Length: 214
Image (cartoon, rainbow, N blue to C red; front, top):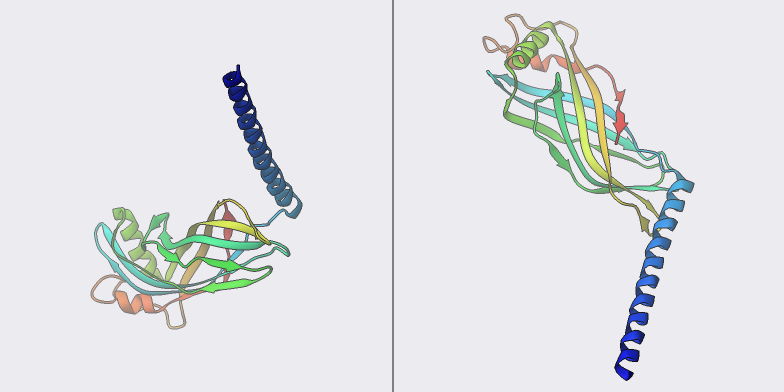
């Protein structure tokens, strides 16, 4: 009988410990949910300040490009910080990547703070569809190229010592490049050695806001 009482006591202790652990887990989850619902953290805003297209080499069916992007992010929250866990930046043309993703360093953004990054993006012989290379040749020759700067990453919210789980963040910024005064060099972009001069004459038109999704 003594053995049975010992086993019964052990089961009661284990059950009580499990109940305490379950209560703690539920309490933490409820607290985190209440904090999130009360504060309602807003997604950070992104702005494309500049894009310099340094070079483009048009092959078939590949493309090599180098560009420097100046990207700004603002935390609109008064009481919630933003932890950028991972941010990968790349450039697309007609929904096709023309540079490889570059990872920005992890960063913390305080309340109402602004962070600016200026990464250099490049891609060597990036595979693209044949019509994409042809379309870019025509656009560069015409002196007007529409690109997209995209950011794919993960963020966390921070309130005091509390840090949320990780959330997906996807940013898309339109970037329009156009020929400045004097127009484009003759001969056709990407042909007869005029590609570098044609790209150099393309200038970023104006800063633009970005769409931010999750």
